Image (cartoon, rainbow, N blue to C red; front, side, top):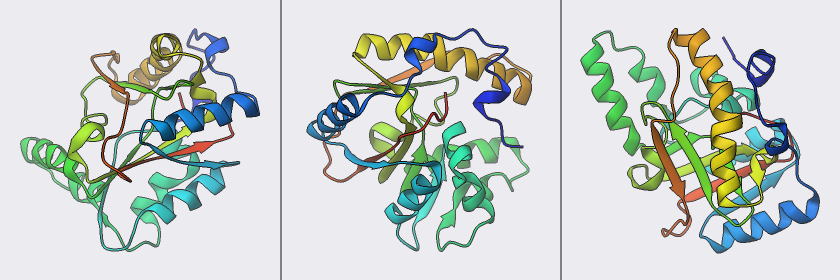
Length: 218
């Protein structure tokens, strides 16, 4: 079942000031700073355009894995990967067909080295840095090095002025919403257990950010 922000926003106390769409000048400056830090950036106007942009990033025949991302759900990527017409090797389908818990966990670890790993992000500093966190690390583990290529999809509402603001957004917007989702989906509370600060991409062309001019994700 798809779980979106609207399902939890009434139950979670969040700082709305860190969840607003930026003006064009702020967006342009953010893109310029991200690109200066080695990230490729594609800006689109809608969730539908974001899905098209993501598909265009992934060639036929490669292995594809995704970490949990409300944004990927909202643009329709998770449905496309599991049910859609594509020519990729879908690692989630392979992983979740494994009955043995230990075997499945090992396959999840191996999937971090997928040819293409997709996910979201919790905050983007206008100065060009990304911030994300997980309880298990199953999403952010692939981002720094393990995956061959990384495609991150984010709503522009995750743009905040500084890196300090990005840390604040993680704690005061993303975590409360994810905690509500985790309790409903898994029956356990979430935690900011493993955190990533992605200051630069040093490998040319490896990491692409698809930035959507919409309110998406946590």
